[in-house]
Length: 208
Image 1 (cartoon, rainbow, N blue to C red):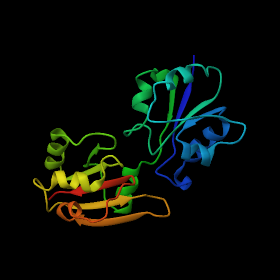
Image 2 (cartoon, rainbow, N blue to C red):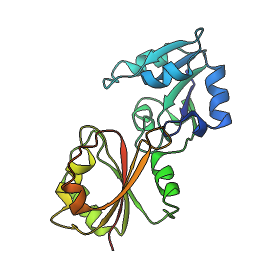
Image 3 (cartoon, helix red, strand yellow):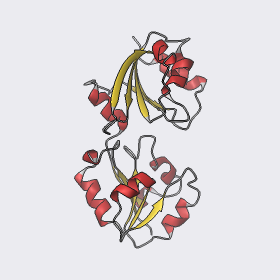
């Protein structure tokens, strides 16, 4: 039976990879992950499998690795809008060992020194903005939204302007990386922002 270790590698900087996660990565025979992570973490003797948007061939590849130490690298935390959802569709819980990581959501709230146990968490990364998401955000006092190039923050802000234009947005971009920045605006201001921010950002929205 194949055994797969899914390792959260944090929001970007290697400083946020836990010692346990790093130990699993170093001992792996096979590393699966995005090209950026493989370039930074793989050793020459390790076999690598770069992930792309098309994951259809991944389950069969992983099943062929029975008996080898296989590690799948996941951005942030594997269980928060990460690859764990896909893997659980093809493998049982017994076949998966999950090493959690620091998510961009965690780090965004940490940067703001803001508790987040009462926050709604959702994602429009690679997803459409639909009425269900907008209604959830309208009802939430505090929310964190993962965005991405296909649905950047300004696009979501424009969809929110008619229901919560004065809500405060903390735009947390490139967290833990050299270009990290945190901006505070209203939804209306973000909707009119001249700059289109396409890097992965977390929008922390306070609607009071």
